[in-house]
Amino acid sequence: MSSHSTQRSGFDRHDTDASHADPYGADPYTSEPYAADPYAADPYATDREQGPARVRRTEEPPYFWRAPFSSYTYREIGYALTGLPVAVAGFSLGITLFALGLGTFVTVLGLPVLAGLTASARGFGRLERSRARGMLALDVPGPRPVRVVRPGAWGAVTARIGDAAGWKAALYQLVMFPWAVFSFVVSLVFLLVGWVLTLYPLYHWVYPTFTEWPGLQLFDFYDSEGVQHRYFIESPAQIAGVSLLGLLFVFLTPALVRGLTNVNRLAVQGLLGR
Image 1 (cartoon, rainbow, N blue to C red):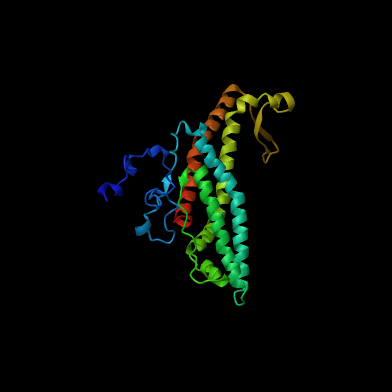
Image 2 (cartoon, one colour):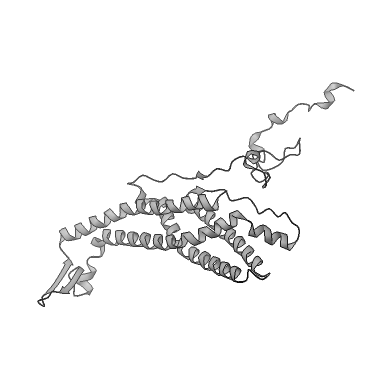
């Protein structure tokens, strides 16, 4: 038998066109998954065996003077505004399951309820990581799957109860609920105040045309002597001053919202990541 019968004639696997290779497929010569396949790694392997999972930014924030007109800023604002209904749903479900689980813990029903709590918290955590990836430009690797040691339904229940990642996700739902309310209110107020004041010169004419006011009324009150005090924005200088004040809000809003969402970034990394 000739020695060349064990060699690949004419071409070696390193000579193949890499552009046609499937990065998530198998090596045709070894039938082993490529090392670059993130889904081929053992989900129960240690970080030393599998390699560390890294948090990465998928997009850099714009400069200060471009931020008010950047889609990056409005994705962050969208994250803050849509975070409130998500936080309400997660907090309500988490508190309900936790209270029900503790109340029935002395019976056999409490364990499946608490297992359902960690399972649902993982689901909300997956949603939050997806929102952070799409709206905050932050890619956070998820935790490892729950490892079931004992067979059967009770093995799955006890594995869920001992799931540290699930309890961390439930903690996220609890502690981030008030922050979601605060972020929603502050982001919405600054966004609306900024643009309403900035664009005031464009709709100032509405007041003298359709109302009895000569312009936007700032205050109207009577003093102790019964004298009425009213103040309107009506002169060109006043209109320009209001617009400049609004423009200041417009440029400060992206920095403010970024500071608010940075707290969310830290929380997602610390409580919902690997």
